[in-house]
Length: 288
Image 1 (spheres, rainbow, N blue to C red):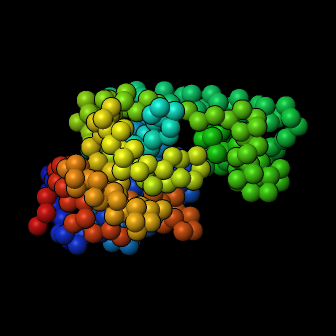
Image 2: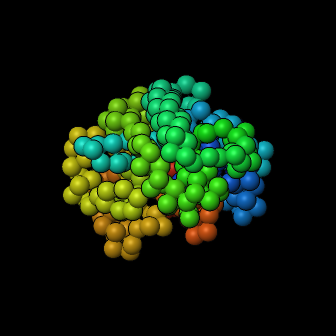
C-alpha cells in the first residue's frame, strides 16, 4: 500500500518498487506514458525512471506518474568515466527544476548528438542511404536523437542484419561514447542534494568493466559515491552476495533495479520496498 500526502510517500515493507528503468527519452523501447501505464496497471507503488543523462525530462515524467497515482522519484542514470573505465551512476532525489546535474548532462547530450550527426554523415558518404528515416524515427519526429538511432536506421534499411551489426558499423564510421567525469558528476549530484548509487557493477558486457568489491573500494577512495545497485538482473547470486557484504561492511546504501528497456527479458521487476529501505528513507520515504 502506498500513501502520498503533500508529496510525502509512505510505503509498506511489501510495497512493489523498481528503481532503475528507461524510456524512449534515452534507450528504452516504450514512451514514458506507456511505461507508466504498464507500471500502474501492474500495481507498482513507487518507481524511479532513470533515463540516461536526461535530467530535463524528470518533471514531465513525474507529472505523468501523478496522473496515474504512481509516485516517481527524481532519478537519472549518468554516463561517466573513471580512469578510462565506464561507470554508470544512478542519482536520486534532486530537484528537477533546480540542480547542478543538468549542466553535466546537457553537455554529454550535446556532444552525443554532435557525434551522432557526424556518424550519420560518414555513413552516407560510404553510400548508405536512409530514405525511410522519417518513418523509422517517427517517435523522434524523424530526427536523429540518440546514438543508437544510426544502428536502427542501418538495420531497418537492410544495411545491417541486426542492431549489433549496426553498432559495429557505427563504430567504424566514428561513433564514440561520450562520458562525463565521475568525480565531477558525484560532486554536482551531492551539491544538488542527490544520492549517488554505483549502477550494475557486475556487468561485463557491451564494454562495461566488471567491478569487484576491491575495485569499488578503490573507486570510492577517490570518489565518494553513496551506495551500490546490488540487485540487478545481470548480477549472479555470488555477485549479489559479494556486493551485499561490501555495502554492509562500509555502511553504504543499496538499490534494487530491473534496468528495464521494455524489451523481451528486460521488463520491470517487482522488488520489495523493504530491500532498499535505507535508501528510500534517505530520500524521504516513510514506512508504515
